[in-house]
Amino acid sequence: MAWKAYEIVFRLRMPLHSGWRKVGNLQMTRPYVTGRMLWGALTMRLTRDEAEDEAATDSAKYAEIGNKVHKNLAFTYFYPALKVENEFKVNWPWENEADFRRRFLGSYASTALVYPQQSASEGSLHEVEFLSPHTIDDGQPVYLLGYIFEKKNGCSLKWREALHRLQLGGERGYGWGRAEPADDAPREITTDRIFDDAVTFDNSGERPSLTVTGKHHLLAHTKADEGLSIEGEIEPLVGREWRSTNTDNQYAGQHVEYNDVCFVPGSRLNERTNFFVDKLGIWKKA
Image 1 (cartoon, rainbow, N blue to C red):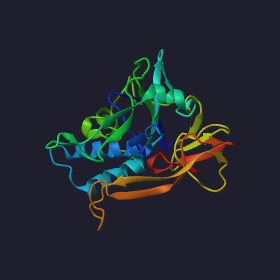
Image 2 (image 1 turned 45 degrees about the vertical axis):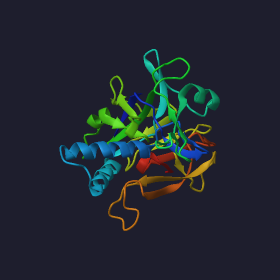
Image 3 (image 1 turned 180 degrees about the vertical axis):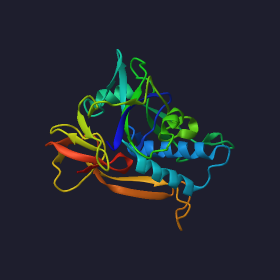
Image 4 (image 1 turned 90 degrees about the vertical axis):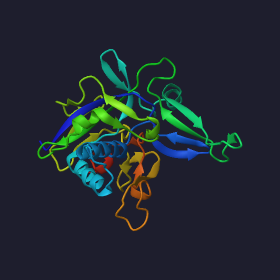
């Protein structure tokens, strides 16, 4: 087998903002962790750990480690889960959207101040939506459940150690996004099924491949290729990166990386389909 599959469960310790879109003053969050977010968090942690006492200020080093992560690891998206007895049960955000938002999502409003006038700075009022570390209604701990595939031969990345010191998503300067492995994570999968048997996987190929039965939901952004029979919304998938080697837009967050036009997670398949897990956890038709 070319890949090993591990189930990872994170205990969410702080609010998590998974950047999505802005509506008025509200910066909305996605209700899940994307592959890009996990790739970015792992790349940052691994690069800084390797630098040890030196300052990790060279974007080329981040790019080098990021490429190693692409080559040696593959991810699913991570979804909110609650612990029921001794098992973790995923709460899919599309099954009952209103109930999900009521239980899992909150928001934080803030503004910049103009001290001489002792007033709010004009145009600075904003509200950031977040996935709460505890359910809003009954205070249960919120977990994030997903899977990491590791290339069986040649992977020297210390990603297991890095899992204990990750910050995911936005607003990290305020301490948001802190998560830590729960229980015995990572746990190697000994079957060929993940996400409560919703998806079967084959780990013998160049990239991990997944099979999803008809009438089931997509669990990651999926490239909108011809020949796919899917009901759902599509969106361009983009992200900001730091590339100091660029001629323009060379500072942190200025480079906009376009990935593809994709069906969003939660879209429904009409027929059994095979996919492979590409970079950033994006699914592509096999």
